[in-house]
Image 1: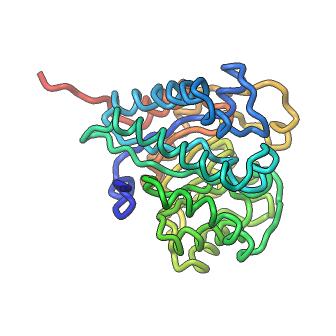
Image 2: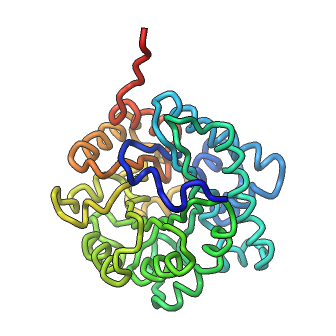
Length: 318
């Protein structure tokens, strides 16, 4: 049974950490091969699951050390029908790998959760196409397409779903509508270009307000991911109602554009200390932004820097 599906603790305040750039960590730091940037393939072997456990536990230890909550996002960003087909997965195998991803997170929660550290299990959803390109789809097509993965998560102990690297409004609305129909809380996380706009040219404000209007505000919250803080900070306006609906950030380590990152054969890990400082500035200006992790190019150093700038150390009584 899902533990937090009907009452997400991250909506009640306080900082929640998440992990960093899973795929870039495995590829560039650990020398692993992930076809089509798909970490879900690791769930199919004991060795792969071992690597995933070690990866998550490094971040879980940080949250425990700081006495804050943690959002466990599953390794399923590519585990949808079109990308699954490229990986050689049929529908049954795809459903199995999505279930296995949640089962692994349940095991980790059982080991790590504490009264001061609620662990929320989130089924991660990726875009149907490329998160860096405007592969447009209709709302109805997006709802139908993503419903299968959301339904699989709904049948597990997942508390919610989170759609990452979404770059156009219609897909976001379709995902939100499918999640609402299947009674799964969802977060919508948009990615933006260096000008703070979606690749379609839509402003972040315009995207969030459009989803809010079309879905009667059904998403639990919104996030921003897969862009450097310098790309989207200028698009945020303190005090605006739409900004108060943005509860999380999972930024890229690099300030390069998406096109530059696509063409790069080497990892740009940026400056973890500066990364943490930028998060500190964000959370002070926008206190609703309290779900904090990383995306491409980030690793445990970046999340440790977030902790230094955004979370007071736990003070032990004498």
